[in-house]
Image (cartoon, one colour):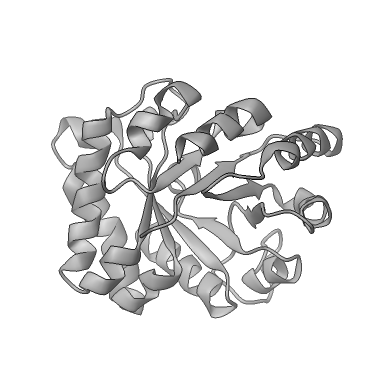
Length: 249
């Protein structure tokens, strides 16, 4: 049985003081949760997360990485650097990276490979824009984004990864895909992987991300192929994030 997984993406939010209060709030009430809990923090706060979560069941990760191992890439951060700080997870292909910074499917697949090369677990973000959904292209877009990784590394690479479906039109908008809409896409992702390996598909955790809140988390997580969530704004409020984690039960 796939263990539920809830990851908080802090995006470009936080300060040393705010982070300390948030992490203390999470640590105080995280015992007894049945899901895996992860926070993905901005690069400058990796050391703080490492220090504060050293004795906690909460894992932490980064929000991005370079596809390059080292070299003259000013401003970039490599997978090995993240690993040195104790990261276990890293987001790759978040919709904001694709839309705002022009990351292509090929770049995302290369970042996925770079993460796995040092033992990090990539969280592969996929999803369609509002225009693509209105044109009926959801399945085509999501399938292409997953295939970019499979074509580069083979389906077995997905064994040591997590996939997060995040419809772009539902991120930070307050609009959430209905549980049925989300389940349809999650089912399609799992079926795409199952066509290549039933074993990999059966173990692959697929998260939903897009305005997940305490009020809608339980119904979303109850869907057969939704294994948890990638949480944005609600991850910045300890009580809300914990409520979402409890919904994973």
